[in-house]
Length: 225
Ligand SMILES: [Zn+2]
Image (cartoon, rainbow, N blue to C red; front, side):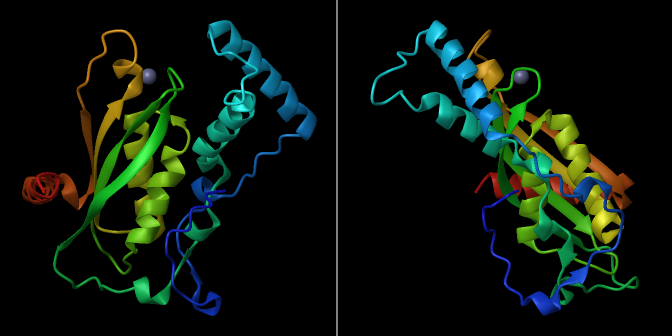
């Protein structure tokens, strides 16, 4: 479960269900029995020791335990986020006759684990959308990014999942997602390349070049701050 409390200020009775399909947002708590947990800690201790970590110093005695817990937290997105399954009336607005105005949120920072090396990649996301009947608060967008970032993933899938889930949640007329990330798997090993990778994903009304230009110009303006 994502436990970081991104501010959500509303009384429970004001909560209404979001429309749209729920499959990607279903809750799936991972069950790991305590005896399995201890076995995994022993595996990790063995691996870290053979790599060179002294196992029995005051600083390292609990490292396998901490490492496993950190990995578990870094992949908590698999468990879902109950606070993403509801919207608040104050977030509903718009109307089909509204002009094609973009709502752009970001930068939203994220940390993920690459599925090829299980090492972190991190960066930030900008999300743009053209509202239909509903808008969604920045706290929910942050949750949406974390839901898919806290997994073993790749930058491309992360962007696709954010864009498609936002479509599913609030049925906007268009969605744009821009991700810029640094990948530790290329920085810590191999060529030690320190470049940053950017990817952009477009849905719906963003097929129009003018809207894409407007979105990217705003993203770059914010990046330059
Ligand atoms: Zn990698």
